[in-house]
Length: 350
Image (cartoon, rainbow, N blue to C red):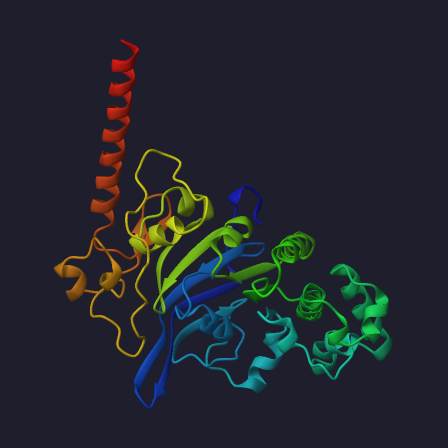
């Protein structure tokens, strides 16, 4: 993670107004809509939201597995959105992906050494001996012995298979790793090992991560900044501390309220309503603000006008028509609660 919050001037990845749309038999489905952000060297950018919000589509678009409908993806200053596979080849080594399910993402017919070596073969890196040394070094970096190179994926545990996936992602010495739910398929104790490994590798290799997860507790422990997504759009972004202490968007507040053990750092009340309803269909999203059908603060303007993601205090962005009223009202409620508690304490003391 970045020391002291300092950021290099130039991002290693810059995404602007990215959109991904699919034509289906039921109509046009917008999986991503107007997504923009920057990622800096050595930084971890968390992406959170419910299933179907566009997290995995974003991951696949970044590494070229999904072709954007519009928008920009600049990798180390070079535009890659919409490029052909052939033209993406030379730059693809700079951005790699760790998939959610290591069992499904590793070829069961190949030994682990060949799996880790594959990116080096595709990009014609080094001699056979060079690649073998590189594979052994990578396995060591992720905590696996050299003998693992001759074994097959089924001979490993889930956590060990994910270490193999990480070694493969590191093979080409990328600048960026997109981690799509890298620990969600693992037991809790193994999750912690994988997260610690990713943190160690980031410090060693100055990696930048796009870390995608539905588990807000995990994101809180690994991310420098967090993007909150809902129905294909970013609705809030902030550094992790600000997001957890003072969430602004009603959706973010409801997500955090559902995290076991999550508490506010001040006297403000928790959001009274959790996310009980299912998200609307991407094929038929609500007019205006997509979250309005589940939001207790929604008014007529929310149905008529889509809120724009705009800067807020303390270097944050949020897309909500009523954020000032909501935060102001709860600040006053919290202050009133504190005064009431103080009055009761004073009366009791008398």
